[in-house]
Amino acid sequence: MASIDGVACDISVVLGSTAVPVHQLLRMGRGAIIELDATEEDEVTILANNMPVAKGTVTVNAGRIAVSVSRLLPRPPTLR
Image (cartoon, rainbow, N blue to C red; front, top):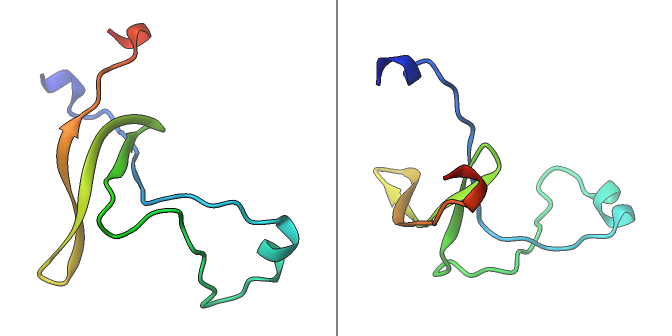
């Protein structure tokens, strides 16, 4: 296990998505709000190196935002 201790992995969380025309995106400034297709009760997708690996829920713990993993996703056949 010690051989993988130094391996870096980028973790991202997808809260939702939306489509925005480029002209509208270019007009956005500081403080602009982008509405997503999700609600606060929806599960989020957790990505490891841009690959979906789990689902979870957003929580606030001691004033910090966190993601609680609720279930792992099956690995694609090419990674088994």
